[in-house]
Length: 101
Image 1 (tube, rainbow, N blue to C red):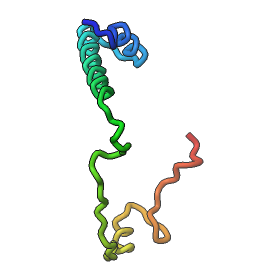
Image 2 (image 1 turned 45 degrees about the horizontal axis):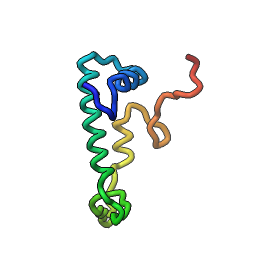
Image 3 (image 1 turned 45 degrees about the vertical axis):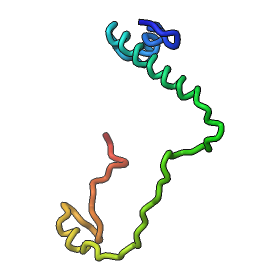
Image 4 (image 1 turned 30 degrees about the vertical axis):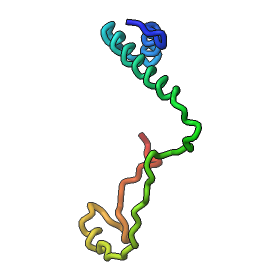
């Protein structure tokens, strides 16, 4: 299968550059699929979009905002009591910088 927009050789070359191991059947399938995609892009290119304003979203997005509500947090002493190691009101963790490997 071949299409004027994309060749089997182009698909093989791109697959090789991407280090993809594709079979002959996959090359044929990918060539057909990519040709179909390029045809779709050509259809889009043929549309008269001169009066359409540039946009980043096809639908308007509205952020849902809510008031911040202060709630009680966890009790520090209770949390640190459950920790494997704590020191001076903080979690104690093993050092990771400066260790000899």
